[in-house]
Length: 129
Image (tube, rainbow, N blue to C red):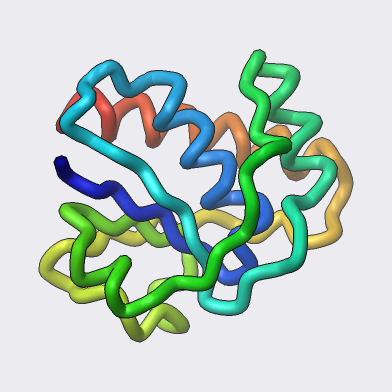
């Protein structure tokens, strides 16, 4: 089993959407996905849940998790969402940064734009694996 780890600061939007898309597109049972954050929020952002539902993917049952050293060590590959400088637990030899804007508390159109970027990158990533 190879663990794919998606990391962002709060684990409340970008990395959660990436996890949802990876689970949707990945058909290889050898890969398991986890998302986590360096400073996890209490819940997933409602706009993240809403824009993923627009793609037919329900992430409402996912929960933010704290990034641990154990997660980073056991990961086959780590993808950060634009926070590589603040992710000290991500070894450079297995980490790739996607440089995605943090939607924060922005309008839903920002979440849609970032969702579309994440979907494209995840599809390419799944294909490469």
